[in-house]
Image (cartoon, rainbow, N blue to C red; front, side):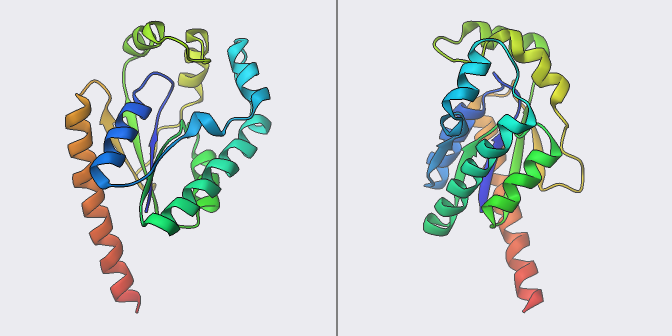
Amino acid sequence: MAVIIMGVSGSGKSTLGERLADALGAPFLEGDSYHDAAAVAKMRSGHPLDDADRWPWLDRLGAALGTAVRRDGIAVAACSALRRRYRTRLIDAIVEPTRFILLDNSPAELQRRMAARVGHYMPPSLLDSQIATLERPTADEPAMILDAGATPEASCAASVEWLVSEASRLRARDTVQR
């Protein structure tokens, strides 16, 4: 199974992703490291990415995540995955069962977190465009929503509990289909 911690910049995707990967004994893929240099330069200069910038990034991350899942059985990634079509693109590239965990928080808290970050290429000025772009997962998507204001420990525990339930559900479905 692939697990993608999603949300806008500053929501805590990497923090939860690293902690969850450690708890699951899984590799962690930092989605930001799959952006090409031009996309990073665009964001660093204060310009939001468009879909043409995002498609190759999502394809690279999805392929890497799929490879990691086939090798290790489970892998965790941090990726904004802001729109449903981006999540669908990731699922198609991964070609393995995929689950999303949205970290949700108030714009004021996100702004505070981004202002406190040092050395990240994503400027706080792009937060509003990310919030405007976010399409919250709907009930028909394989996703759960967590309050990003919870402690990383509590978020990790809730994520593990949900993922165990999802894995059991997938096993039961596979058994019935055989």
